[in-house]
Amino acid sequence: MGKIGLYGGSFNPPHLGHGLAVQEMRRQLGLDRVILIPAATPPHKPLADGSPDARTRLELLRLMFQDVDGVEVDDLELQRQGPSYTVDTVREMRRRFPNDELYLLMGTDMFLAFDQWYAPDEICRRVSLVTVHRSEDSAAVCRQLAEQAERLRRDYGASVTILDNRFLATSSTEARRMLRFRCAETYLAPQVLAYIEAHHLYGVGEDWKNLPFAQLRKASLSLHDPKRVPHVIGCCETAARLARRWGADEALAARAGILHDVTKALSKSAQLLLCEKYGIMTTTFERENYKLLHARTGAAVARDIFGESEPVYQAIYWHTTGRADMGLLEKLLYLADYMEPHRAFDGVETLRNLAETDLDGALLCGFQMSIDLLESEGKALDRYTVEARDYLLHERNKA
Ligand code: FE
Ligand code: FE
Image 1 (cartoon, rainbow, N blue to C red):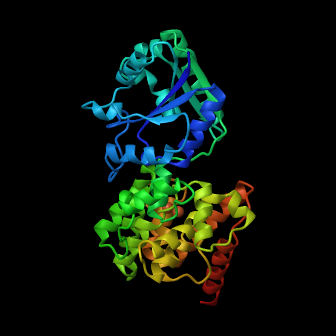
Image 2: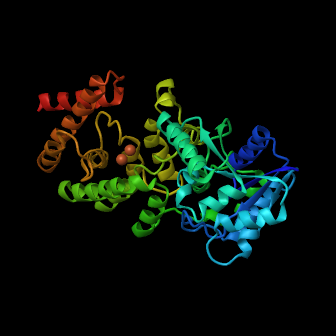
Image 3: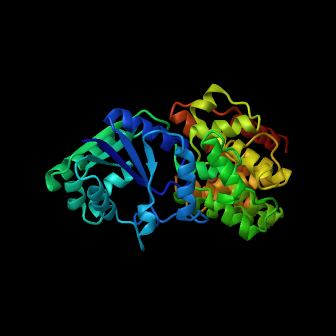
């Protein structure tokens, strides 16, 4: 009797995190082999726009694991018509391996939604369930996982194992973003990357420079976390409106607005890779608060990948901190980001009113609010914001 792991997923694309996950699960569970089963049409989550078809994802997976002993890739879900139901796969595997122990491996999202799957009771009768919790998961997520495991044991008599994830935290979504930023070497096996490049998958090789606005908007929004999209659109529209009000270039303001947070969804390791690629020096403080880096990596991507002009680059570069003696577009983007319609905090209405009548007054108010907030939270002040405020105060006194 052997132990076999069944690992399904969209593998869109398969990345090194999958490779490490497979090795680690084999080790922790003592599996003799792992069968990878790419899903044709995942029923739980539609694939991202522009994803390659199932046959291509299968080919990538085969390339990735071609030399790894004890790992096979199976196309059984691709041979079925319609959506892939796990219960059908589990039935087939049970038929093929009647005397082996079967373990169904899945991510935490899938595990937490397990009750909504088709025929969960039958799946639990036929296989053991395994999920992983990532080291960065919060205590709340760990508790949710433990509660779900308890419920599945009670309701379906399930056998459940929760593994510690000591493997690389990465995701296919991030690998796709980094492919777009031409910086995916550390995410993918070399033969997988070579295939993606040769076949122009995931938009690799497409020229994104100087796109007309509608295409730029679509490309940019595809790189964001969906939760952030309303903010980005709000910021873009506000920047364009302020440009009209203050006589700046409306088209440039809209382009800066739609791109300003284009790298915000990236993890710390991805931010640092982009910093390395673009020669952006970072301080210890910035590495600890890596979200701050998105202004600089976003500016670099806007220039390098999207071919944007110097004013757009500068506006994005300074959009979170401001600086002394800002250009008009920089000022407008800073304010648009601060006061777009989805922002709700004490003082935002003051900011919105000032932005219509007294641009520098609005900026001064924004800088001061940022400084006050950091001070009240006991955090280090950003030196550029302090300089920006002091510069405007000095200018006002002179006048
Ligand atoms: Fe931002
Ligand atoms: Fe923003």
